[in-house]
Image 1: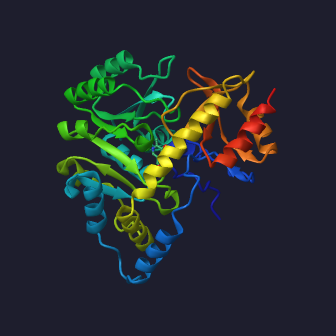
Image 2 (image 1 turned 30 degrees about the horizontal axis):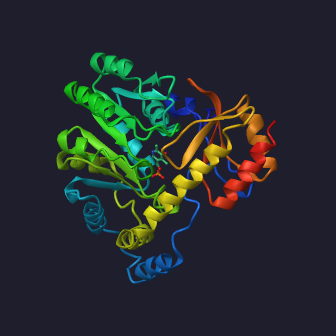
Image 3 (image 1 turned 135 degrees about the horizontal axis):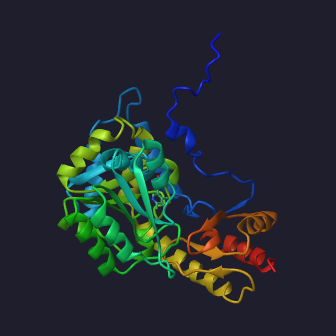
Length: 357
Ligand SMILES: *Cc1c(COP(=O)(O)O)cnc(C)c1O
């Protein structure tokens, strides 16, 4: 019997990184994961299942995901040779870190979407985080300095930003992308929430072969459970990315359901409009709150500064509402991240919030 630890061969970097930071709650009103509050329309679910039933399950799916990539290409007006799909954009973040981060630098803001630092840490990329400005906008000058003095590597721009919901001015994003390109960085513009903000950076991807847009079906499309993310890039870059995406990782259900969704995209816009109305209603209702300060947002979630995030999370849970606590964010301190739900859920949240005094 060996006395060695089962972890003796596990790389230090993996052991040192905490597991994905999420604890499920029993609370009924779920405003913690920026999901759509509405399920995929029932008649489209039926169609998706029907299509899945018609396909062979004993066969591997198409290695090149040709039909899915063509459908995304049609939807986005993009050459399918420049479309890369993965089982969620979280997987693509790992792939991007493998592509341009390992042994190099990952440059992002602070705060940023948690998966970027997580992957940089586990895969052994040098992580550089630059605090956002006091109004949550991009720290342009500080980022420019890092872009010019470090690198090459992966430059992460999230637009609109997560977890703040702040959308920057397009001129600012263009400026940073051009400097990154001039210094040989690979730039990912993570556009997980672009439908909510009405922004779209494909023009920059078109102009720069080292820039790509990362998108997902998990948020505005309301299909987080199907797991599909995609990158839009120049075909040469897409070919390199594709080498790193695990083969056959898109299953029959995901392919069938996504094809049906893209044939019936009409429901998305309607939901985006309701989200904006509800978000603005919630923000207006929170305006006079004695202890909580809500920040404006261009997405389907927003931040609230609180004196103590854990206490606020507990209070809301007592009212059957679950949100995400964010401890000690740079610039902001303790925050709640609240997803916009259905109107009745949002009412319940506002009632619970009123009890925080
Ligand atoms: C939700 C989110 C993603 C990814 O989600 P997937 O479900 O893995 O596609 C990526 N980036 C940001 C900023 C997000 O908020």
